[in-house]
Structure formats: C-alpha cells, structure tokens
Length: 263
Length: 263
DNA sequence: CGGGCAATTGAAATACATCAAGGCGTGTGG
DNA sequence: CCACACGCCTTGATGTATTTCAATTGCCCG
Image (tube, rainbow over all chains, first blue to last red; front, top):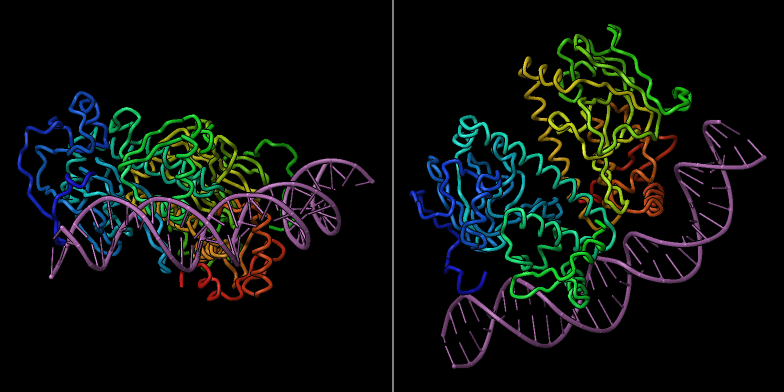
C-alpha cells in the first residue's frame, strides 16, 4: 500500500458502514459468500486485476463492513463475541502470546480468509488478530453464518475444506519452525505466501504484494528482526529475490525451493 | 513399560485379533467409545491404577485390535485407508517430513487418542504415525464410526471438542517452537505432557511414564538429540526433574513453570 | 560374542541473539 | 517551512547458544 492510498484515520475507532447492495462489485454471484471457499475464484481471473480487491457479499443479511488502519489490533484473545469475521481487503496476522510476553504469529490472513474456523463455534477466540496493512473486513453474526451454511450445502463443504486446510497449514508451520537455519525458514515463508497468493490469483506476474515488516517475518518464524534483515539482504545479494516498495519479486524460484528444503 | 511386560513379537506384521467382548475391562459402559471423549474418565479414577490400560469398546461393530512393537511405523503419509485408529495402549508419535528428510513430531498420541481428527473425513492421512513403545490400537471403519457419531449426539459433541483441542495443541506447539532457548522448549514439553497425562489420570503420584527417547524430544521441539541430552542432564543436576528407567519425576514444578515461561 | 540403538562427553565451528548507533522516510505539530 | 518523534531498516561488534563431528560407553537382543 502506498502512502497516497492510505486513508486518514485519526482515531482508533473503526469506520463502519452497513451493507448496501453494490452491484458494481467484481463478485456479484449470489453464491459468493466467501472468497476462500473458491466460489469467487472462477470469475476473479476475468475481473480487473486489482490486487486486494474488496469482496462483496450480496443477499446476505446482517453483515457490516469495517475498516481499521494498519498496526491496529482487531481481536483480543479474551474478548468474547458473537461475530465471525472475514477479511475483504488487506493483510492481517493471527497470533498468540505466552504469559511471558513472547508472541508467535500462527498465520497471515489474506483477503477472503475467515478469521479462524473455530470462531464459528467458539465465542472466545484465544488469539490476537492484528492488521498489517489497512484492513477491511466483514462481520457476520455467528448464527446467521451458520444458518447460511445449512441453507447451502456447497458452502458447508467449502467450510470443512477450509478447516482441513487450516490444519495442514498449521502442520506445515510446525515443520518449518522446527527447521534449523534462518535461510530455510525464510525461504519457506516466502514460497508458501507466494503459493497462497497465486492460488487466489492475487499476483501480477512474478511480483507479489509483500506488506510484511521484518518484525512480522521474525515473529512468524521465531527469529529476531535483526537477523531476518540480514538474511533477506543476503537473499537479495544472491539475486534470489528483490524487495522494494512493499512488493517482492522472486527471481530464482528454484534456488528458494532448494534452500527451503522442498527440493 | 518394563522389559518384562514387552511381548515378544518377531516380525513386522501386526498381531490382529478381532473384537470379542471382554467384560473384565475397567471400562465397560456402553457409551465408552473413546477415552479421549471423556466418557471413561469418570470411572477411571476408581478403577485400578494401571497405567496405559487397555480401552475396551463394547457393543461397537466391526472393530479390530492390533498390536505393533516399538519403533515400527503404523501409518505412512501416502497410504490411503478407510479406517479410523484409536490408541488403546502405549505411546505413538504423529509426524510429518519435509522432502529433504527433516522430520517434525506434531504430537504425541496417548492411550485414548484418536489418530488425527481429520482421519475421519480424509482417506489419506498426510503424516506418519510411529509407535514409541509397543502400541495396541483399535481400528474402526470410517463409516461405522461416523454412524456411531450420528446415533449418539454426545459423542459428536465430544468429537468437536477433540478437534478444537487438537487445534489449541497445534497453536501451543507453534508457540513453543518459536521460543528461543532449549531449556524453555524442553520444560514446556515436559509440563504439557504431564498435564495431558494428569487429565487422563495416567499418573501415579509425581512419577509419570516417560518412554520418549532423546531423539523423540529432539524432533518434537526442533533441536538435536545431543543438545537435548545436555539440557536434560542440566535439569537433573539442578534437581528440577529426575529421569530413570523410562519414567520421569517432576521435583520442582514451579521451577519448570518459570523456565517454560508460563510464569 | 557382535551389531544396532541410545546416551554421554568434549572440542571446534557456526549460527543466532543482543546491544548499540546511525540513517531514512513519513507523519505531526509548531 | 521547520523541527521533531516515530517506526523501520541497516550495520558492526560481541557473546552465547546450538550444531556438528568424533570417540566412548552401556545396553539389549540375536
């Protein structure tokens, strides 16, 4: 996100506008409830290639859209809520903290991602969600969301796929955190992000959006931000990647694969 | 498990005996399908204090019991199957491997644990399961298991609790793997195992079963077995714990808590 | 007895954390 | 417009934690 795109938001309150039909959206199928559930992906390829485009949810009752500036906390682990959140625009991080203060990012949330599949059934989240860029998200009532799931069998199926996916991702995260070598970990992170973005079609050429700060990378893979900086610089000197202006270009994908141990 | 308890099994094939009613079991409620689902725990406290006792599953159709010697692989990640496995006796480890060979243990499976909640819906597991001690497990047909879930609402509820639990455990694992300092990680592992064992009532006094080899600990927390050995020795010199003869005694629990960062 | 697995130990190399200082861009308030 | 604070990135110097390698021991089992 460039500075000119950034809205001026001076206080910590999220701006809120209740859902009004916006037929100009690039996602106007009545089945398009959730991007992640693949129902949008088919048409998104033909749509304008806006990155991070807003997902619209027509014919869905009682949802509201919120926008929060970068670096703000969206969800506190202890707060209870009856809502389910879906990211429409921007990046967020889901994390937990040990009582001693150490924080670990569990996953990055991209547009279309449900904020933790368990949030459908539990009213307490048990983790933080923080905005990385400015984030727009949609807020559904748990009950409404569940009801929609029962009305539409294919949605239910997609949800179960989403939570299996979530588990696979968690397993892969553990695999990577257990790795030795900062290079391995970072290469893995880059490749897995690239894969996710490509799957959603949010990638123009080889250049991908990369709004992560070094501290995000650091607390996602268990290193200090200083060391992350050194390794990234090294990667760039080796012409494996190129980072500039909040976007990343993978120059030598094979090389990264090799370093990450995906071979 | 002591040497004298260990059956002599000479080949790699698992011994298989189809289920025959065994009313002498310490778990004879008709509802007692799965230990983990809490239905056994109430009575297990009054039962004889056998550690690692066999879980029996009366009135449940088409299940078979298998026994596999220590260090043998129970499940390969690519093999497909229509069965759901539950550990009855002994310890196992669930793990995944990167293409380069690095293996990460995702969880230790104790008596009563379902081998991955996703195995109910997917015919391919995607991970290894290896016996740590000799392991006895029960094998259900996926369909039969699902049918039983629908027959019994409370079981369904327990299942959903099991998978939420599985996710919490996965999150905690990531949190620990991201920690710096071998002591922290190992203390955390010990405490979390103790907690799980205590919950199941498989703990006599402060002494708990600890059949893990150093390499298991190592690949569970992402360190080398050499270093694990050094840290464990250090813990014992500091009189935090005492390990002997495959069992572990926690001497200074507060100390461990402090080291683990649980404060 | 020999072979495989596990635990232990020490010495050396390396990877990583920690600390500290400086630079750069951006928003902010005078 | 300026000065200033803040967040972020970079760099170097230093110490520590961890890996790696190698050699030794004990144990269980065939």
